Each structure stands twice: as structure tokens, then as C-alpha cells.
Length: 183
Image (tube, one colour):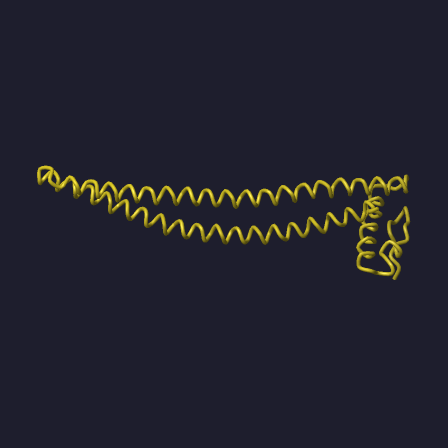
């Protein structure tokens, strides 16, 4: 059975790994969004250019249609088509950017939510460990309890690293002056 201090330590390491992974993931997402923004800007430029060309064609075809008495009506459809294509490119670009950036943000939010859950469990385990230390040292003040909790955590780290002695073994507790470390 895993003790409170070992479970706390596992969660702390998991939380640190997750935060490190989250930072790496967020850097990757930032690069992806930057690349997406570049592509969207170039697509937006193309869409706007096609729209301008379509509008110019539409105006030109309208003038020619008026001057020729309606003979150039077919060119109006050409200009309208160009404008429609330009608008479609612009709208699709905006929708694509929004969709992809939303999916990216959802990933980041899921990672952050999981990290927050682990942090809450760490807080609960820390308080449980404090209660366990308080039960063993009923007269200990707040500072001494915190020192005992940290000594237990450091001792668990020492055990995990295969050390023959731990920080806990070298601390001589004194209620008046706190922990004393041998020289």
C-alpha cells in the first residue's frame, strides 16, 4: 500500500511532467497557429484580389453593357462569378482559421484542466499528510508541522533515489529551535 507521502510525491512529479509537457505543447500550438495565420493571410490576400478583380470586371461590364445597349450582359456574370469566388475564398479562410484555432485552444484547455485537477489532489494530500504529522505530534506548532511534512517528502525522495540515509534521519527535532542539521 502506498503511503500518503509517496502518493503526494507521485502526483507532484506527474504534475511537473504535465506542466513541462503543457509548455512544450503550447509552444507547438503557437507555431501551428502562426503558420496557420500566415497561410490564412496569403489566402485572404488571394480572396481579396479576386474580389477586387471581380468588382472591377462587374463595373467594367456594367459600363460596357450600358454603352452597347445590353450586348455585354454576359460579362456581368463573369464579374459576378469572380466576386463570388473571392468572397468564398475569404469566408472559407476565416472559417478554417477559426475552426483550427478553436480545436487548438480546446486541447490546451483540456491539458490545463487536467493539471488543475492534479494540483487540487496535491493540496488535499498535503493537508492529509499534515494531519498525519499532527496526529503523531499533537503539540507541534504550524511551522514544526510544515517542517515535518517537508522532511517526510524529502525522505521519500531520498528513498526513491536509493539513498541509505535520508534527510529525516539527520534531523534532530527541537521544539524551541526547529530542525537541527548535523555538521
